Length: 351
Image (cartoon, rainbow, N blue to C red; front, side):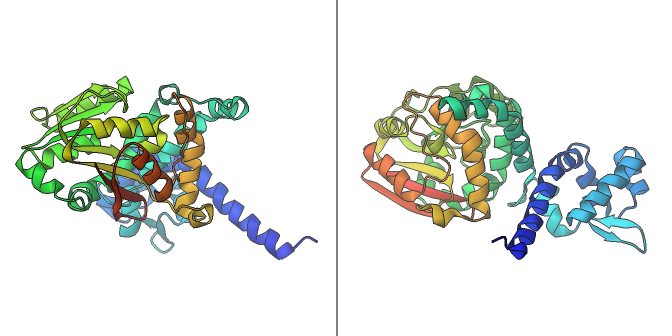
């Protein structure tokens, strides 16, 4: 028998979900046109004031502001007719260095929508969709999505959580950052540890080209370079540290990648694997973070892995037990969880 109370509660939830989905283009417009920046810097504004400051049409400003007030993204004062971006919301929308900056997530959402037709066909065929075949904005979106976590944790917390690694980096270490994408993680390490040398590897030529541009922009070309190579074949040896940021679960042959990493490391070398936060059981991941990661895994991670040889398709919510088993099968004797955040777990593997 139909429970109307449950139905009405679920309708309310769906209205919230649809409201969030329909907000994606408005949030991206606010980001691209500098509306959040204007509100963050200028304080409370009327539609006319925002239109003047951001050089947009007032009628569009009024409707955009009204939507954001209805969404709880902005505060509205009926007496003054002004809209305010509170400091908490500014951390989400306006500050790219904030640990909870989420503009990259909205970009990823658009990329996933653009890739629906390809992934839908893969559902039927069981085949994969190559990383390079997905929406071109995916590569920029992924880098932007992960950057805040790296910016706020990599040098400050994750590397120090490894056994003796920062001391090596401060002296002179040789590092490979595999699956480097646009190079944000590589460049952050290179700037923090100028005595060490860093090579970023990625199998996507377009991402490597962007990483080289970023290296020039950030002035780290003296101790950093980027090359096209796969995780199972990147050309290196006698490494002190190998890093994998949010990419092991995307690989078709993660065991093969682990074996190759083991061969490239010095006897006392370390492998840092940053992966999405996840429990080992589905019931452990039935939460807002797991919801996001399962969506990304379905649309991006599983198709990417299935397009590669072996096609292990670990998925973004693989969990510690499955990941540590893969790492151990690759020849590592010691695996531990060195650190974690609400969004990531940081594993350290030693020979």
